[in-house]
Amino acid sequence: MGFPLYHILYLFMLPVWAQPGAKQLAPSFQLRRAAWSEDAENGEAEEVVTQDEKQLLNTPATLKCSLQSSQEVLVVTWQKKKAVSPENMVTFSKNHGVVVQPAYKDKLNITQLGLQNSTITFWNTTLEDEGCYMCLFNTFGSGKISGTSCLTLYVQPIVSLHYKFFEDHLNITCSATARPAPVISWKVAGSGIENSTESLSHPNGTTSVTSVLHVKDPKTQVGKEVICQVLHLGKVMDFRQTMNKGFWFSVPLLLSIVSLVILLILISILLYWKRHRNQDRECQRNCFGFSQL
Image 1 (cartoon, rainbow, N blue to C red):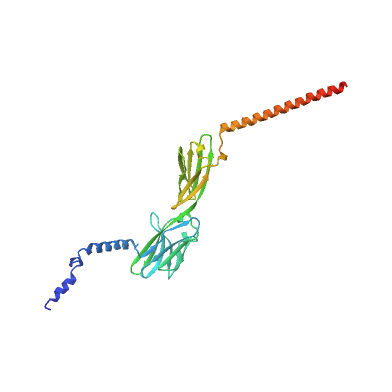
Image 2: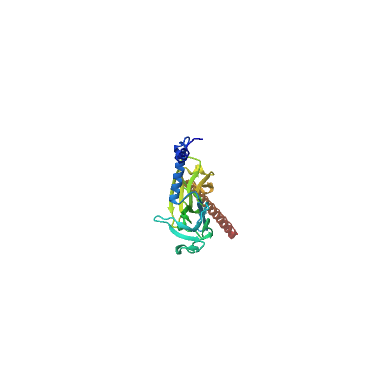
């Protein structure tokens, strides 16, 4: 064709971004490569699939890791993330099987024996088990590939709702104890209502939140329904209470009733005494007449 062979070789040796029509592709190619390099340096790429778990405290819990690539895995290691450095918990390999570190014996174990898919199970979760965990796949030729799964432990809310009438105000109290701390809100009609909220942390990891509605005019709430709303782990629960007027009284009204009862008793005693005295007089007259005969 008359076209020198070295010209053809020169075109193949040109960088991609120097060839016509490829100038706009270079930046996106570099970004994808940089992102993959960053994941590779951290040993945590999209090759490992994990899922965060929420589990009831003092019950079993499982964490799973799945390696999506077909690389040869030699050892699977589970570590707990800590402030200073990760702590080894348990490993699995074909040569040595499952090896649990002394601090975690009788606490957890690997319940899915695989080099591509691994699952650990906590027999009975405690507060110390809450946190994030790493699964490391030690591969042949590619080093460590890791994923992170976090375990959150919760306690279902225990809720109480009650009220108390006073002479000049009404207190409606809603208390909720849970882990993590619940959030309390109200649905109540009327005006002149103030709200105060307190929280208290307990050694067992739960938190008690107490919200009190102070109603200035208690008569306005008699016969009405109040709703205490408890928000916990994204779920809202309604607790309803109707203000029963049978428990409401007025001190002046009570004093009036007591005074009236006392007055009726005194009148009854007086009438009985007068009647009894009249009967005695008639008896004396009759008895005196018979004696003269």
